[in-house]
Length: 166
Image (tube, rainbow, N blue to C red; front, side, top):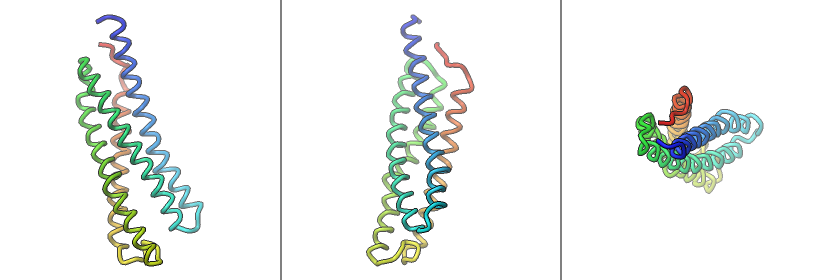
């Protein structure tokens, strides 16, 4: 393999790792620092919840975009015989499905329940949809935790070995 091709592969692997690391860092920052701080700082839980929902929605869009980019990078690396990315590609697909389900399913459904409650003049947790909202919140939280753990594991796995230039 010539030096230019090897350099390109190394650059693509580094880009993959940087992008994955920044994304997983954003998941951890949003989910385990920013949102808890919002709830700890604001006395009005309804307002805190609305702010948190907007932040999680933005993070979900970022997650879908990053997962698509990582999937494209993984496919390119696999085409160049970097087989470590075969199993990573499946993991990214799972992460993409979680992101898409959250972004286009759960979050909009929860927002709809929240808006419906506001039209009735009450917070969602005092509305007739409170139990459903609570279940969706639990599912969403579980998926976010799973996404965070899988993302951390992916970055850990890819960073434990030197960049291959085969």
